[in-house]
Image (tube, rainbow, N blue to C red; front, top):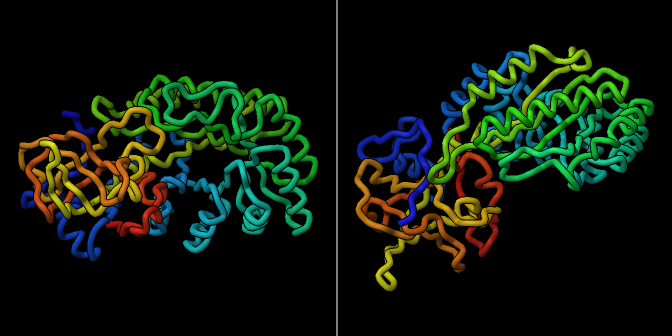
Length: 408
């Protein structure tokens, strides 16, 4: 038997079924018109941001990383909750534009921005987090051609990383950002060329559950930013401190101690060096804001046995939930939080493998998991599906098409 990950708080049973925002899974599927279906709970989004506001010092803003979940309905809802948005493509910029989000609230990161993306960003008036001297030069040239000085910040590649991070975004050679020792000279060049100087972006990693690791990284980020600001010789308008806040996915994972992180950050913010005295500070969070607010629902379309092993074959799979299948960077496949949604309060009674509909052995949603007995027609729920699910999975693979999505 292989255990499943912990189901996030906020989910209950109603009439024996999984309830999301007070409505049964089967009722939501009926409203959406079928499965597979991603459901996002706006009340859980609200609660997570409220928890952050309560824990963090008032001076530290919250930015939403749109790449975590770019569904327009989700982005529109987040617009009323967060202070800013971090995007990673012209496509995400277009989503924000269609929703009427003020470009002054948007910053654009990514190591491979094309000239057309730079042009769109400069025309819109968003901040470019430049990742190289070459990108900064292209942005300045485009701004000169448009007659509009670009708003430029510099993404820094620090010499340190976020310990225990699922994806390390700093330390050593990286495609992301400008090596820290080269930042002051580039910043002075950008300022001298007439760009609107917007500060620094220092992102060290993602998905850690260690409060100590985040506290250490945040301290190093603030120290580095102060050192760089002094070397640049100009005030630092804004510092994007990155994120890295993780959520529990797997058996044995424990939630991040947000109170500990907030208390340590408040202590640092209360004693900032003079170089950062007037700097706007923000955290860039995506998964931590939306991950636990989403559930992926798929339907059992076949129940079969092979050599004594029971398989529940669903109409979902890795083409919608690549990470849950174990094919999104994990070395050892472990089970995401999962359940039989239509038998949510029933006791586990059998060991099953829950697989998808794709013609590949990689399409697995749960291995050797203890579940209530499920038959054809029952619904399977995969939790922690609110981030890097629908948009981070190969929905075109084998031609089954994308899943439905709804915010309730």
